[in-house]
Length: 392
Figure 1 (cartoon, rainbow, N blue to C red):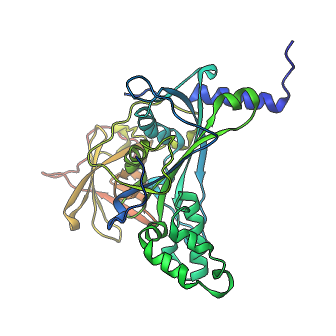
Figure 2 (figure 1 turned 60 degrees about the vertical axis):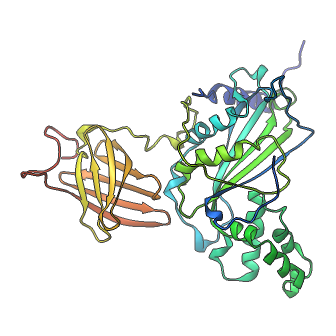
Figure 3 (figure 1 turned 90 degrees about the vertical axis):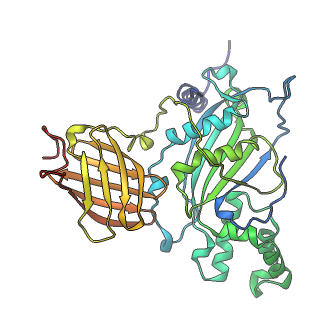
């Protein structure tokens, strides 16, 4: 007769069962860091294998399939000072279910496949994500070094020469040595990348069976990948970031590898909803009765902008001053409307009341009040659809 598990073991077993039940996803040669002039367009990847983990290969040379379940490692609050407590709508509104969906296909490209049955599951992949505040924001030398070093450890840059220079004992009380300055200059490309604000994702793969049967966490591999925040949008660029990193899942990179964000689109399959409601907002549910359909222009202070929202829920954002029109997504909840502009780091949230939308415009680290007024349609009247609306 088997022993009765204690309450703690029972909770762990229940947690692992929950991971399996909710993480099912339907899927439709490392070298040293190279000097790249435009590091803002490169994904930085650092990966390592642990506890003797080596992937087996099949007869055709491809990797033997391994099954996995996702675990929510949560959004990580990286080191920040009170001076730089900022918001970023391109990452703040993206929850675990969306991130799991975007990482699933790159994992599948390396034969890591989702599983439902805990008895046949090989890996528990914990997903952690976030945004660093880089040392470029700080002028004080000691605090800047402290911030850069902690960010380097988090992102996987700590094996590089310029980061090791920060540990020079001569720098503790009397400032940096000549050797430290020399290393920083030689590896300036690495230090430059660390000092940027960066989006990051960390995948930690554990032996699922060890956790399931022995209640022990055995780390098998870790892959960290990141991208400069400037000129990028976390939600838009995450699939390409993950695809860049996929080649190194379960492998050792022996340092940092930098890869360009590929051109084109990465198509992600469907994902079953995971028990985490943090990513369920702004998913594009549009009710034509909300009163949001029509053409809207900014009448509050600020650069001119125009929103075009069709009764079908298709939308676009126009910046007349920059002669740019880009696709957008719109969702409604009663008279509340949310518009997201991918690639611009912009989210508009407001309430429709007749021919006006009053609310807030978020763009990266900035938040401003916003008023939009419905534009007159050609021939008189307004651009709204006829019929009852929820916003009146």
